[in-house]
Image 1 (spheres, one colour):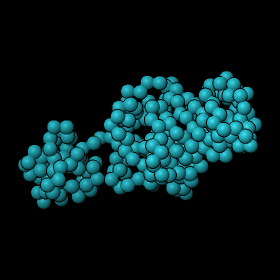
Image 2: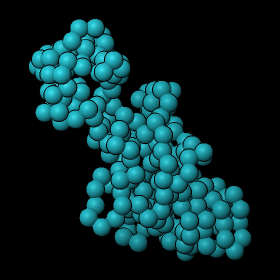
Image 3: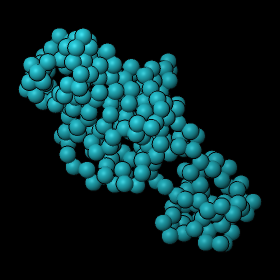
Image 4: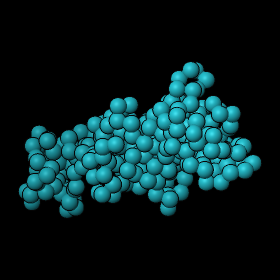
Length: 238
C-alpha cells in the first residue's frame, strides 16, 4: 500500500494534504523519514509514525449503535438525519454504512461497518440470520398468536412469512413480547402483528445473530465492537 493512501484513508487529509506532511518530514517508516508519496509499505509489518506518534492502520471498522427513533438507517438523506450523521469524524473516514435497516421509528441494535463481505453474509436471505425484537403491543397477545407466528402468518400483500418465535413477557391491555424472525421484509414485525389483528406501539431490536445490544448505550450512542464480538460475527453460521 502506498504511504499517501494509508494516511489519507485514516483521515489525515486529502492526498494533497498528505503530500505536504511528507514534504515536511514528519512521517517516518521504521524510524526513517519518508518524503516519497509513492513509497509502498506493509501496514501489518511496518511501523509508521506521524509527528512522533505511531499510526495504527485498520482496513475495517465495526460499530454497534443504539439507534434512536426519528433517525433513518441510511448513509445520506435530503430530509432526515441518518445514522451516519451521528458518527464522529474519526469513524466517518472509513466510509461505513448500516448493515440492513431499522424503520425510522424503531430503535435498538444497528451494526455499522465498511466490511461489505460481512454485511452481505448477515443480510443474505439464504443465511436466515435471526433478529430479536422487544415490542409493546396494543391488545392482549395470546397462545393462539404464538402458534400463528410459529406457522408463519400471511401479510396483507399475500406473502406468508417464515416461522417466528414469539414469547409473551406480559399480557393485558397492552402486552410486552419478544419476537425472533429470520427475514427482513419492510415493516415486517408491525405487519405480522397486523395480520393477527394487533398493533405495535413500541419496537426495539435487541439482537442480530450472535450480537446483543449493549444496554449501557444511550439512544444515539455507539461503540466499536470488541475483538471477541468481531470474531463471533466473522465465524457465525446460523
